[in-house]
Image 1 (spheres, helix red, strand yellow):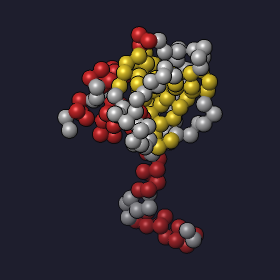
Image 2 (cartoon, helix red, strand yellow):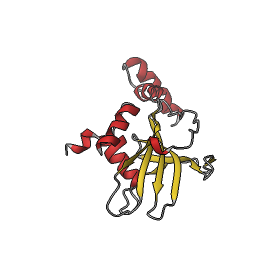
Image 3 (spheres, helix red, strand yellow):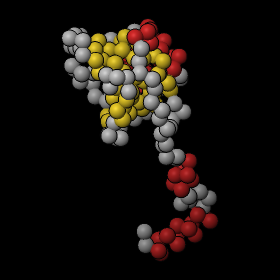
Image 4 (cartoon, one colour):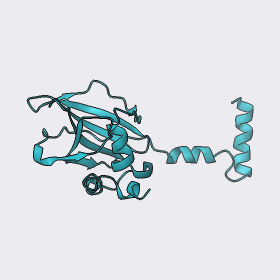
Length: 172
């Protein structure tokens, strides 16, 4: 903005209340999102795995380790996801989901010995509702983010898993 216009705007700000400063005030109110520090959980145990339905298009079985389920003050639902193939292959990952932005990320992948391998990818990825590979879309739509709004706490998320879907999504 040329300095002449900037001067006029500043002058008007003193003459006309609120002129020129509304955007600045709003910017001050908008806080940058800051992610909590992540602590990797213990390896999942069979007793803490709760199954959830994804779709008829997949023969895999899907589980959340409910002992790792949390809802952070940063607005991220964190959980350990376990996917078991019909042949018995097992994929374990510790993940986060942001309902506000419809994104997910993998923090670490589980190894056969129960340890974790931290993900090299630090970016969040959009959740897509792909026909054969929709476990993240199912978690977003039906369990953790009903109507796009994050569950209040881990208790609400666990209950949605136990019920086979969040009560808000089951009414539709």
